[in-house]
Length: 545
Image (cartoon, rainbow, N blue to C red):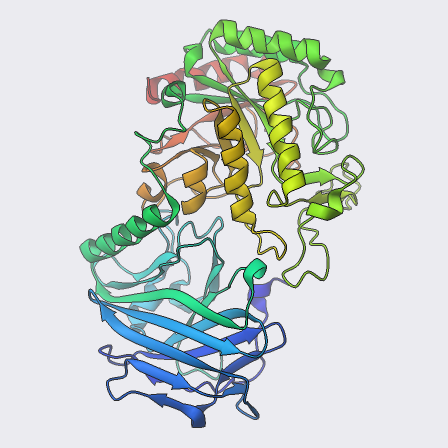
C-alpha cells in the first residue's frame, strides 16, 4: 500500500482561519516532528484583526484532546502582487521534519475540473471530479513546485518559492469529516539540516486566473527558479558543446545484461554505427551505450570495458570507428547504483532514511527472473565525498583513455532527503568536478526537473511519462530530453539491458525539445534493418541540423 493511501482515521479538528481578501477560503497549519504531528491549540492562537498575522503559543495533538507547551508558530499572510503569500516560522522542542498548510473553501468548480503542473500531459488533469491524488517535487509528476487547477478561462495557481531543492508535496482529498475538498501543501526541511526552528519558504495562492494571468504567474515562478538555481537558456548555456545542438537521433547500443547475456559486442556496435551512418548524417547521431562495462548493474560502480564485449582493445577500436564516422559516444554510468560485492566501502555512502536509523533499499529489480529482487544492490549518495570521487575518477579515466564525448548518469533524477549529505549538493559538486576536468564533456541524466536541468543539459524523459507537456517551456527553455533506456527496440520491443523485458516501441511523434531514440539489441539489425533506416530518415527530416 502506497503512502498516498494512508491517512488519519479521525478528525484532527484543526482550527481554521479566514484568508484575507479571499472570500470563503480558510487555512490551517500542522507541524510534524520526528516524534509526532501537531495542530495549533485553538485556545492559545490569536489572529490579527486584518487577518494578516497569526500567533500560536501552544500546540495540540491531532484531535485537540491534549495540548502541549512545546513551542510557537508565527504566520504572515499578505497580498503580494495579487497573490496571497504565506510566510511561516515554527519553533518546537522536537526536531521539525515537515510543515503542512491546509486550504479549504477553494472554488469547487475549478477543483472538479482538475489540476495540472507544467509538465503534466497536455490532455490530462489530476484529481478530476474530486479524485484523490498526490504530487511530489522533485520528481516525474512535478517538475517545479507550481501547480494550477481549473480551466484556462477560470482557475487558480499554487506555488512555493523555495531557493533550495527540498521536498514539496501536494495532496488533495475530501475526508469524511470535511465539508468539502482539502488541499494540503507539505514542505519538508532537509534532513541534513534538521532543527527545532524552521522558516518555510513562501507559499503563494493566486485566485481568479485566466490563461494570461496563469501564464504570467508561471513565468514569474520560473524567473525566481532561474535566479535561485542558475538556470540558463539552452541557446547560451556554456555546458552544451556545439555538436550537441545538431543531434537529431540517439542510438542506444545495448551491451551486456545483468545475467551476462551479450546483446552487442563492441565490433557489432561499430557495425551498427556504420549502418546508421548510411541513413542519417553521422554527426547528428549520439550513440548511448548501456552495459558497456560488462554485466549491467552487477559490476556497478566499477567502470571498465567489459571483457565479454571485447575488453579495452575492442572498446578502443569501437570509439575509433565512431570518431571516423563523426558519431558522438555516451557511455552509461550509475549515479547511485552499486553492488556491495563490487564496492566494499558502500556503507559510508549508502542512502539512509531521514532519521539515519536504517539503510533505504530503494531499487531491487529482479534481474534474473526468479521473481525475487536481487539482494546486493544498494543506492549510494554522490554527496558523500569518497563515492563522488570514485565516480569522478571513473568517468574521467574513460574520457582520458577512450576519448568519449559524453557521460550518462543513471537515476540522478531521483531526489532523496538523506540525513548525512545533501543529495542535490552532491550532484552539484559531481558536475562541477567533472566539468573542471573536462569542460567539453556533455553530461546527461535520467529524468529531469527544474534545478536538475540547470546541471544537466540533456536527460532521458522519465519512463512512462507523457512527452506532450502542458507548458513545455519549463523544460525546453533550458534543456533537451530523449527517450528512456526502457523504450523497446524495433520489432519485438526488447528493452535490452533494462529490467522491463519487452515493451512496444512508441510511435515517433515530434515534440519540441525531445530527441528521438532507437535501440539496437541482438536481433534488431538482422531482422528490422529497414525499420531502423526509416527511423533514421524520419529523425533526419525533423531534427536540428
